[in-house]
Amino acid sequence: MRNTTNITKSDDETVILRGISIPLASDVGGAFITDCSRNRERLFSDQQICEKYGLTMNAWAEIAQKQAVRLAVNAEHERRTFNGDAAREAAAKFFTKAPEVLDTILQDQRASPRHRIEAARELRATANTGAERTSNTSDRFIITIDLGEDKKLEINKRIAPLTPEEAKENFDAE
Image (cartoon, rainbow, N blue to C red; front, side, top):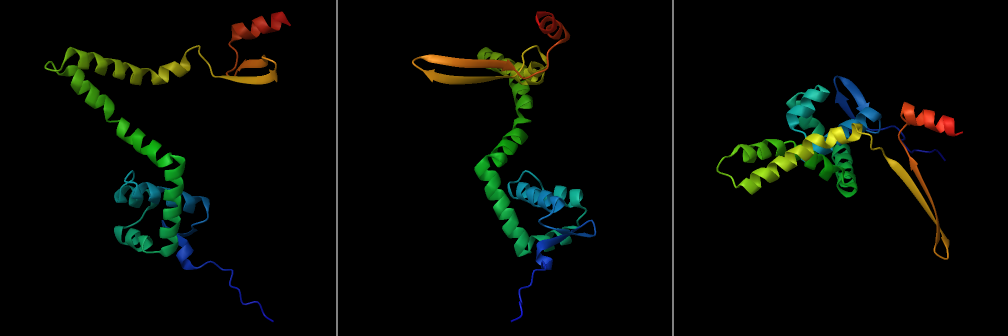
């Protein structure tokens, strides 16, 4: 008996990006599918997809008709929805508008002083998010082992590298 199983991939499982046939299962194909999912979530426009991957609008419409692409985009969209990636990216995109809105409230002389103060606090918190990482506070990991009978062993260690002063202190202590 002859095996008649065809293991070659169909043209439906590839896309032409910048004139090159790209398998959907490749790294570039996976990135394309992720961007198509972002397009479905309205985080990426059709124009952005076409520009990024060198497509004409006709080529983009043709790709959208491929069943393998639609199934892969649906699966990626579902994955991104369930693991929270879609919501996080949407929130980050929409959050970029918040400082402008807060500034409008802060500058509005007719706004309640309470609202203006709250807007100033939110702007300060937003502006400080990057600065907090560069301060002397560092990430730590804490391991707690319950030994029973109300006894616990706790390991509290710093993740960030030591400062030169701390390194010298630790060296001197040894």
